Length: 206
Image 1 (spheres, helix red, strand yellow):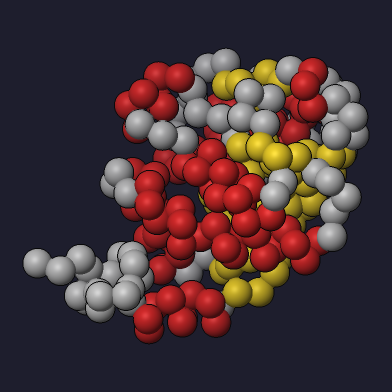
Image 2: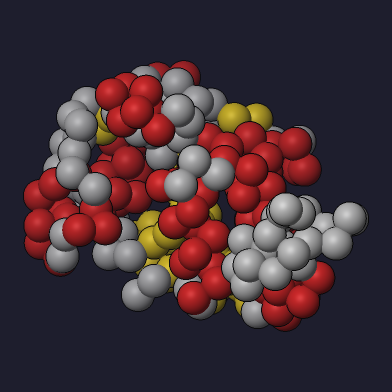
């Protein structure tokens, strides 16, 4: 059988990859730079930008990328992240993907946030610092938790090193919901002397 579109499941034409032309057109038509403010651990606001609305199609792409062993779907989403970052005109930031715990990474085989950050780096020339953040605890999946439980689940779950001190860091992740994970990551980075932290995610689900 020919490969199927990751959204509508129609057979792909020879020059189509992952998405059919119609679904890719719909995805591109839905691009509109959005922005939210997240509270960092330790206090202070952090700006988080996202290029896409959390539509059913975007939700499916993100979930299949993470949970269905389809890392190649990151290639569909990366150009949107790159365009969002380019529109911000930041001065020489570095990209830091939100880390997975080592056990979860072994189970999944990859970190989807790293795939996104690496793809953005290839398109923009920005540097990726994969080791700048480490997840200390193998926390529960945030998708199954609500509100305060998300905050407690990620509290003090990350540690940053000093390799990014003085830099403007762009935290890269897939979806923003409550902001608990990004807020904890940003707080850990600020304690190590990062000058500024901005978040960049595919979409916001809240």
